[in-house]
Amino acid sequence: MDQGYSQNFGIGAVARRTGLSTSNIRMWEARYSAVEPQRTPTNRRLYCSRDVERLTVLRNLTQRGHAIGNIAHLGLEELKTCLNEEVATPATPQHRVLVVGDSLERVVRAGTIPGQQLVGSFPDLSGVTSYKEIPESDFVLIETETLFPETIASVRGLIQSTKASHSILIYHFTTSRTATALAKAIPGLTLLVAPVSDAQLRRECLLRFQALQDGGATLPTDSGPLPERLYTQHQLARLAQLTTTVDCECPQHLAGLLKSLSAFEKYSGECEDRNPEDAVLHTFLHRTTAKARRSLEEALQHVLQSEGISLSP
Image 1 (cartoon, rainbow, N blue to C red):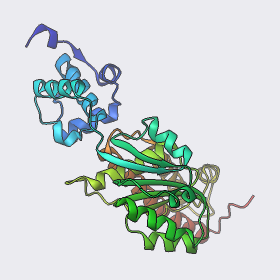
Image 2: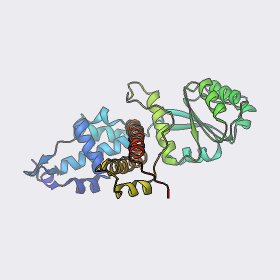
Image 3: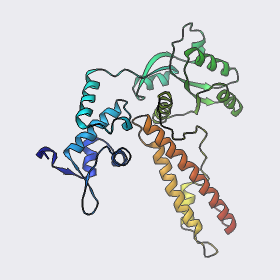
Image 4: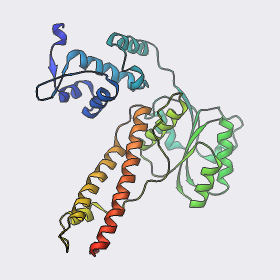
């Protein structure tokens, strides 16, 4: 091995040099065999300089829209050639996006959402109806203060005019009946209740972009509402310290499990999404954890009732 490639690094040092998180490095290694580090007798990973260079190039390519599953098998020289071609030739946006709402336009123009080309922008829905030629697009982003039954026709007409197969509508106030009717009336529409963070909007867009691509990930990512939490962190902390009336530690054990699940639910909801595959995976983990948390919350409710324990002050 060349001397330049003989230096060994721990995973923390590799993370600092590549800009990848340690969990990301482990995932790329386990799922895609992106690198194959050596192991010490104590099973500690040791990466050589070539591994660091390879991970750095892979990171740069995924940031430019390449799915890690499509490039992880390539050799280092192939990866470097691909990156050089990307840098030499500006990347062509993959998806045409039409935006309704000034705040959404700022997010799109800021480059928060990768793989998009802004083809049209309107300040509000009323401004769209007076516009004679609406650009064709792959994806529509809409934000509106209120939703009324008469809004359904306007939104449906806009999306049909653009021929977009996917869309996101962010609203502040409406009735559940109107929201349900809108979701049923327009295929491919995702409804989000404001406020929506830039990170959440990025993830939702990446999920829609993944659906537009052939051979996309097939992990289930249902768009139904997440179950609300039945217990606060303070209540779980109280239960963890509780002495029950019988020799049973189930409330304490369930409280500990719920604290861990709630923490992972929050973490998976905030994970950085570098590409559509990340978004699909993190959404799957977030929703699966939320459902598991609700199941354990209901189990805890049953235990507390059986034990006659009340969490009232």
